[in-house]
Image (cartoon, rainbow, N blue to C red):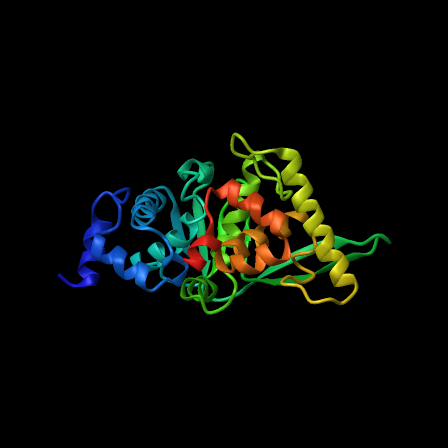
Length: 257
């Protein structure tokens, strides 16, 4: 049976079932992000992907067709952060909207002087509280392929974790046993350090956008945690330690294995 037929056969069954083993192995081979997972972790991720595809609605924007392979590519990346947290962390919303490229979002802002500014922002992704995740398909692919030290899917789904308590502030609900004061100290120090270094035109892994709010800094840190854990650990080791406890994963150990 060809890979395409296996994929269709799986999607024709109950989509909460894990992906066909051959389909899954092929997906893993094409995603460097997942290469460090143990066999047990890969199997757990496979189960989460089945639940995710069954529970979410995928919509293509501007004529983009969302086929079975695209659903799986998004789901595999989205479920990595919840590998040891569980699918309940993504409950409370259903839709994923995928654009064929970056998209424009209108804005209406009032500055400190009371002057109103209107225009459009170009976005590659968004995450709406209690609403959809919006993704640019080329960025989904580049994140899966490991082309850059970035992963849009992980970034936007990190916002979803942050929004679990109703507000995106870089302080998600912490698992039992984690210390809120230690989390706050680690991320406040790292966020302030980033802004200080940018003010002095020093080299950092992030730019002005990631420094614009604790929520964006958290999402970008989660992204770096999974994609380039060595960089995050070298720059802000206390933030890395907190994310390791939060996700119950150690990507740096996988990277060095």
